[in-house]
Length: 206
Image (cartoon, helix red, strand yellow):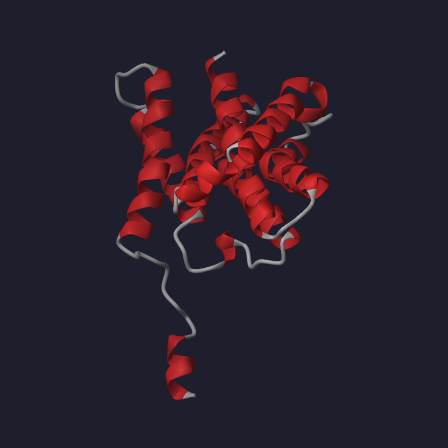
């Protein structure tokens, strides 16, 4: 029940982020729902295909489609209030990657993968819904820019395997690692921390 709750919260966060992007692009109602749907389940679909967990979870459990539909309706009804929050898209996206990173890691552990593969699976789960969303909306995906995004997932996922060595309840380690992912992403944006720009010298030469 604990992991299902985290998964549903992640689904809601990513669905709302998809709605916000779709509305910025002036898509129709069907387009808004599709973008919200692929944002919410894109990473999890790829994850399940990689570990052979088929049919993928949203095809087996109707709660995911219903949750996305509810999130879409909520975001549309309260779109004006969401727009007042300057960082609403960023916040929902950041919460989503934190939650989904750990869900992906948990799925990897259930599949008996080694820690580094679990971290990779968590990063895929957290990142690729946003990748699909941005590609469909004709944007360069955040993960391919210099922003700290996938790096936050990797560091947060790595922290989980360190924290769980401590004498604390596993669920606490899980939540702490979610907060690490979210915290790294927030701090990176707040203090403009980014990955090195490999084109800087080329620009200067030009």
